[in-house]
Image 1 (spheres, rainbow, N blue to C red):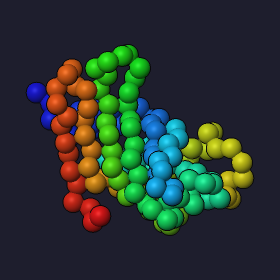
Image 2 (cartoon, helix red, strand yellow):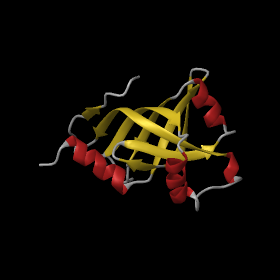
Image 3 (tube, rainbow, N blue to C red):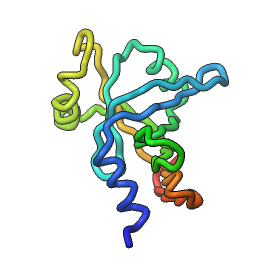
Image 4 (cartoon, rainbow, N blue to C red):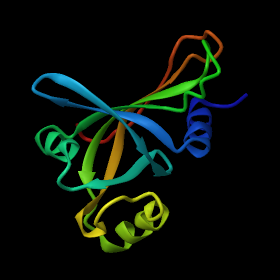
Length: 140
């Protein structure tokens, strides 16, 4: 029998793309994003001048849907509530950038590396079972 932690990690290991929602003027904005992870912490990159960064600088909390594989009703996926910060440490920025180099569009000097620390993850639609929750002790 696998634990909720193991099931969520399996999805994080298998998938790379999810939708990330931010809030602007009280309204949600969602976009597809590509992620890497270390354990349960997600990393991504984006243009520092994008609308998404303007939204995140006002409100660093995000909601991510991750792992839905389009097989129909009952597909298992993860809902992630997290808090985003910009990565400042050069070694980590370079390591994350290696993965994203082939995906980046535009001037790489305008790119910023983002870290999403989870506050809560929920394993959803596991064969009709109720959601299973994993919480984290990061400060909100």
